[in-house]
Length: 102
Image 1 (tube, rainbow, N blue to C red):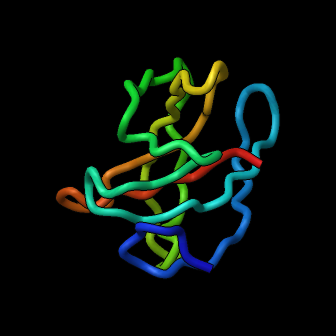
Image 2 (tube, one colour):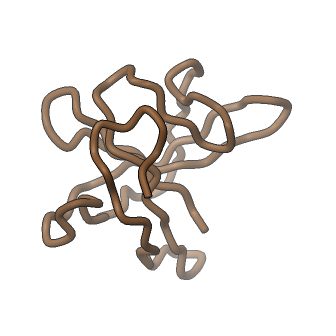
């Protein structure tokens, strides 16, 4: 399954991560070139201001290369009258990966 606008096909899988408040499962959304549309709940996150949450970063695997772990910061945007939480990280120069909590 691939995300519209993503530059790579990814397999969707759940990754579990322990936080102080308990276990969180993360689902890969996509890998895109910076600024290329990536939609989370039908919202292109690049069109909003990201607020980095006061949470530790999460170590998550590259969706196409699961043996490669990357540090992802947890962000939130305000859109459509609500809040959207996601993890994102720059895998290499201008190449970003996005995850959402399950």
